[in-house]
Image (cartoon, rainbow, N blue to C red; front, side, top):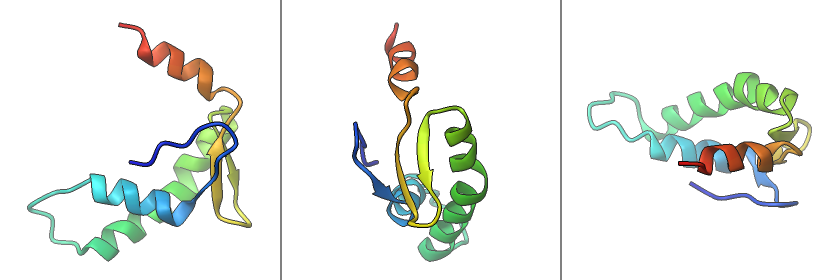
Length: 82
C-alpha cells in the first residue's frame, strides 16, 4: 500500500489498484480488473467522501486525487499507541 504524507496526492485509480491488490483472495472468481473497478467505485462513492467529511482525507473529485486531511495526524497518533 502506498504511504501518502503531508501535501502529497495520489490518484484514486492508483489507490484503488493498491487496495484491490492487497485484497488478494485465492478463491475469488473475479479478475484483477473487476476487483480494481469494484474498489474504485466503493472508494469514490462511499469511503473517500466519508473520510473527507471527517477531515481524514482531502478528495478532489474533479481531478480524481486524494491527499491527507487535516485530522489524519491526530488519528495516526491514536492508532500508534500500544
